[in-house]
Image (cartoon, rainbow, N blue to C red; front, side):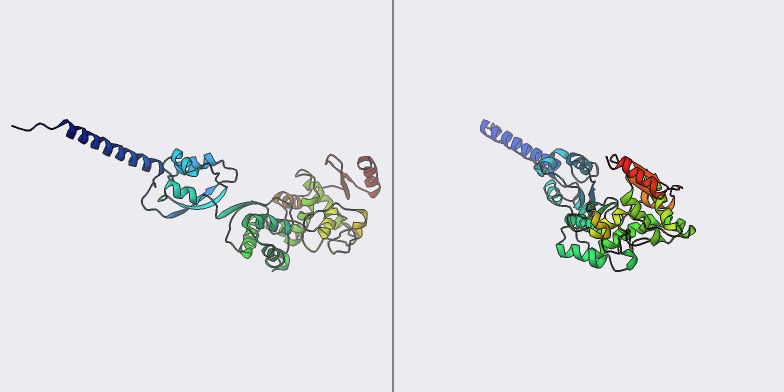
Length: 329
């Protein structure tokens, strides 16, 4: 006769089965939330766009198979924000490892606006990449002065994703390469117009700094060309050239005082005829295009009123009347 199984053994057995089931469910849940999507995977570059919200980035990580669960990764992230930039990640990372990998980007976004001088660009890049003052100075005085025609104007304004371990020379080369890429279609057209690319870039830099807006650029370009091609050539008398001569750290584009027009500098177009020795800023494509396609005008003078509107004049007498009408009040 078979001996009946005791109630105690049955309870223990059922409890064991329940415990094992709970353990299995717990392990499955853990790996579903926090586990690596793949056992083995190569390291990849993951880009977080400049204006991306953290939650959008998490969704992108999930969609691209870098994390198993958005909720699980959010938990591992512990409320931290994911900065824009470039990261090295792998699909073999757990949620915890991924959260750690996304703490600090190895590539930083740098936005360089149109019309900055290279010292300002050095500040933007240096601050993003953690350059020392010495590195910034070397970029300004060494790596951007290796060729005469690359002293200024060829450090193209754009949005860059820059590796933090890239050298100052590599950064300078990167910006120059971008300029060459963007300027090439215009360079061929300037050749057809018998205009040297260096001359065109100088004019474009003046247009960039002097125009009140994009719409005004062709008119300003037309007036500058009129002055340069006048017989005899006229002094350009452009305030931005004096600002460039006087600019210093903390105030790269100072407000001009009457005495400043006598500043002894080769950039001062109030005392020297013709263009400055180098561009006075790094212009964008709008200014370059305006230089190539200036407005046909008889004007030789211009000013901006308090609303930023441009008023031009054919003669100095008309210009003086514009000064009385738009600036004296």
